[in-house]
Picture 1 (cartoon, rainbow, N blue to C red):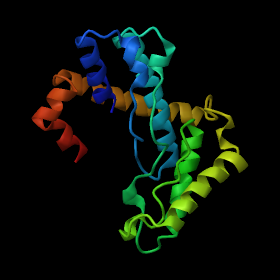
Picture 2: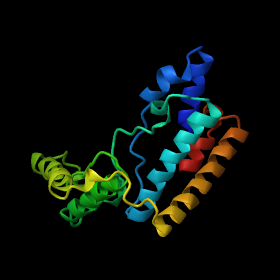
Picture 3: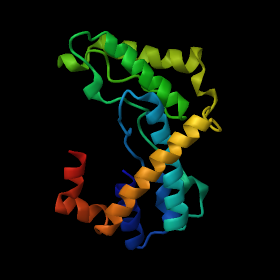
Length: 194
């Protein structure tokens, strides 16, 4: 995701745009991941730090809004973690997504709805339960009152550093292969994701 973001910013600059005139409009997906909540939190924390560093140091962005990592979804464990055998358990998984989202200052999203793996389309009941769960986490649990409650935790800081170091290695590898566009054209990105 960072490499693709870099490619987009570079294309804007190559087109003659000032980085601060458009960088604040770049959005990333939800960074879907796993049920390992601590790793998911660390990954999103690392992504924020990385994007800010990329924008400041690589592209010379001066506007602090350009340094902010924007995502259009909260933490999501990924649709592959949901099960058809006991679909109501998926609601618990989705609520954990919402908690992880809140723990990194993201928009709370309790998705996918519990009936996603049944392939019947998202029922109104499942959608309503997901939305209600998000509202409960936001308004009743008040989990969004602190943007980064893990700041200063030895475990979380250490895990975030580890995740960030691993991600920088990927960025360096993609850069050495000519950047994200070249890596997509060569099939490298697709092979790595597979």
